[in-house]
Amino acid sequence: MKLNKNKNKLIFSLITLFIIFSFAISVFSAETASIDEQIEELKNIIDSSSKYSDFRKNQILLPKLKELLEEGISFEDTKEIVENSVKKLTDAYDMKDIFDALLETKKKGLFTVSIINKINEGLAKNASKVEIISAISTKAENLRKAAEILNEAQQEGLEINGEEEMVGILADSLENDVPQESLSWLIKTGTNEGRSIEEITEISEELSYLSLLATDSGLSPEEISLLFKKATEDSSNIEEICENIQTSLETQINTAKTDTGGTVRPSATSDSGTLPTSSTGSPVEVGETPVQEAGEAPTETGSAPEPSTSSDGDVPPPPEN
Image (cartoon, rainbow, N blue to C red; front, side, top):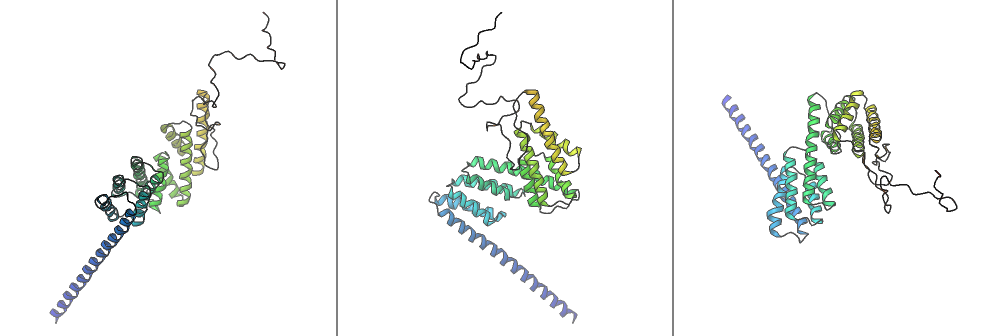
């Protein structure tokens, strides 16, 4: 009797394994069929342009597109890139190189949303392949640094919601030359204070603006880093720190103006977030001689002033000895 029970259990186990195995095969087959269907749709988009030969479509583009889908790039994102590429009549080999750069980023485990945005932005602006790949490389490096900042905070026990969104926010700030140490401080402080992603985004954007303002005013990356570091050391209040950076920035600009006699841009911020410019509309760096208006001949240094005329047009006589 016991033998029959064991036999029944064995049969039941084998049936269960068979069902699981069959289900796994069916799921895999469904995914394969799905990718094949997606490739067919992408092929139809490429076929809409006569620019691409059969060889370039079948041997260059479609295998690379299949690799993108298999690597985890969504069909929607892949389709958008293909549509924009075809619309701009991008060369097939250039498209392949751009796809390779995207794949490399994906294989490094980095979030690809902002990379894909960079590609579509470059295509929309008719940027060259070299420019697009350079933008991908820069963005990927900033994403890597942003991920490091987040990982460091998580290792210290901080629980961070919206990891992908937070990495994108930090990467954007790094692109605007906000020091990495300042962003690390922001994540830790903001999270400890229970601030939402929206609030941290606002603060990050403000730091980006202040960093751009500092760069626009002629400060070097080292000077900007020191300025941000001092502000975070002088206070633990986020709003106060932003004010401290602004105040220190104004002091730096005024000091540079006094020391060099150069004309610098006004340091006051505006609600619109527009970077300040000189009164002529063209940038004037710290210590740089302002450009004169078009049509005006520059005055030679040391030349004698023109004699002034009286109201009746007579030139006044020279002073008597």
